[in-house]
Length: 68
Image (cartoon, rainbow, N blue to C red; front, side):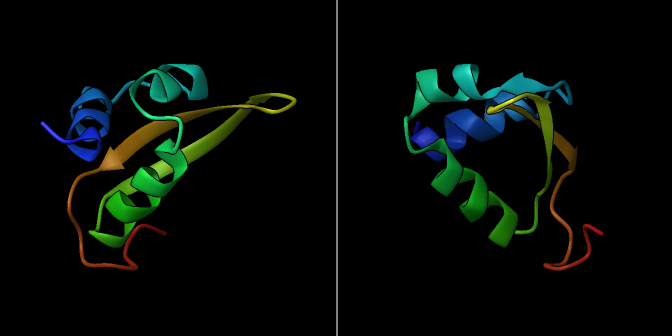
């Protein structure tokens, strides 16, 4: 399983996941999130505290640009 698939698998539960959780899979998780968004996944970024963020899958595969 690729790192991008691992990130997606984690996010598919619909819960919020911290940047620390995602960094455990890949330190470059931001790039993987970007790729998933380009593929049509709607992933929300939530600032939780200072430089800490969480990520949540809002909806799976839509047409690119339909997440708003």
